[in-house]
Length: 87
Image (cartoon, rainbow, N blue to C red):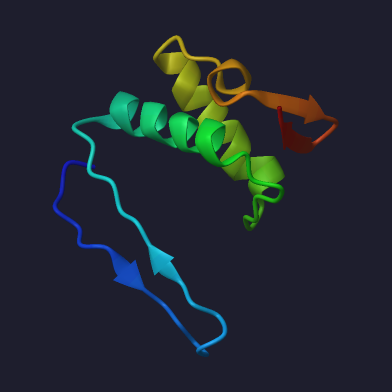
């Protein structure tokens, strides 16, 4: 948060190009807003995480609540059991 980070690339094989865009935000609330906007813009089919259902997603949900944000509403999420989908 609020650090100058250059875009990075991880391309293990030419057919698996991986250029990553980085974003610098002033604070945690801005970081959450950026994340939610990215989810709205990209509507990913899959979100991959390690232990996301039991740590990552609840953590983001709780941090969003601290700023009176609703992750599902902000990112156009639909919750199906433990799974997440985007509208």
